[in-house]
Length: 295
Length: 321
Image 1 (cartoon, rainbow over the protein chains, first blue to last red):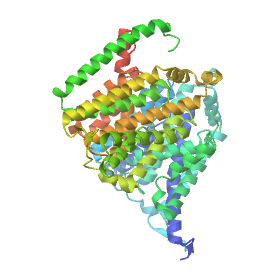
Image 2 (cartoon, chains in turn green, blue; image 1 turned 135 degrees about the vertical axis):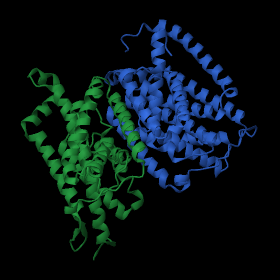
Image 3 (cartoon, each protein chain N blue to C red; image 1 turned 180 degrees about the horizontal axis):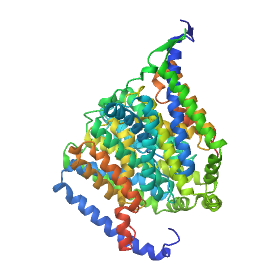
Image 4 (cartoon, chains in turn yellow, purple; image 1 turned 90 degrees about the vertical axis):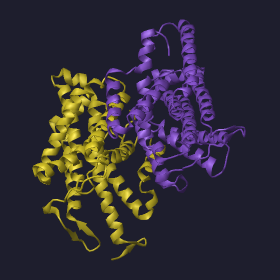
């Protein structure tokens, strides 16, 4: 044990770890929001609810079908992503031509519907989800204790973030996507089915949220309001980072998670507001956001 | 929208007539209502009607969707309750204090929020409101989960005892109508015309020499102040200021009321507020299903009913309402 700025190292690194974990979820969720916004011009308020659906889907698969965490990690994003595709076909395709604010209001309404349903059936207290056997326990690193599951979440979300970045910035499919974001009419003229791409993009973004939900299930309780709690913070993260850049969303997400964790150590009263305060400061200094372009 | 409108003079005379008739009907209904309907319900609906009108000033006439108006409503409610209970201010002073604080909060929040447009504006207002929710949760004077309870209604100007339900109703009605007329006046002033120009085409308004950010900020402050007035009144009506009024669900509710009634219509927010408050009162025993119903109304309104009740009615009767 040693101390840094009068804070025991255990506490400091412990909070840093929690910060990194929160940061992974901020990064995954803001990444999905940015991808969806780029393609659909809709801020997906349902994102939090879809993250919650991911956690619940993992819980239900385990309870009723006996499918474990690893199976959930693959099945749930596909399942929830499919519901996203239905939502896009049924509702979102009709608001793309309208003012931005209608997309926001529509997805807000959908979030209320989903959250209401889950509250009805599961109450608001929340259900525990066991850490998978393979990731039980942890390692003593000397200066802190590192639970295996948490290390896994950080590493895996970094991999997912990087894979998404790679797919969008470095592959042929990604280049179609970026082109369609810039100028959908022109890309359509080249014979690419843009409406289908839009639908699949939404499904992908939703799947990403669901994946984050599965990963979050063993850390936080699985509860109906877990989505609305996090989505507003993620909005602030998006305002800070700007939605113009994939890498920007990742860096901002992790960075803010760490800052939030550190605030818990040094000034705990401010830990729930620090991200919003940073947002205010960024708006004063760089209104377009750290990585953003003025739209 | 602006292109399709008939020439201005014809609308002026016509619409002014229709508006006066509609306003008289509204006042008559509200004057009779407390003899038929439970006054506390009416006062609640009136407070929300004023809140929705304030919100509508911003979304309907400047095109700025604030998703954080609960910030002004809830904080004014806290500060009014605090002033009335702990400082012993008379009700008129407490309400004014709440309103003025909301205007100041609006100045700060608006200054930050108008730096970004469109969708970002909504996210910033939502985030700022959430921040102030956490502040309210932690601040010592707000009483945390309990809120500020047993707020005295006091005597208005030292004369009228507001603990009497009908007297309180008259006070609330007068203040809400005054707020309503104030917003109507703002919308129909030269200042309001500039706001509408910004809504239609901000770049063009800038090129005509208007410093649009100042207009937007002033509109934001006015909207925040009136929202605060509504919140302060609600604190006196229920003799309670609580966390519900600063939470994001409250911001969502005011969006719902305005959307149902009709964005950018004068009477829409009032109609929407009465409908939603009635729905919540009568469906309260359904518990969480209310959330589902609210969400479904949002979805239906956006997909099929964007003009709202009053908007559809106005289109049907070909008048401005």
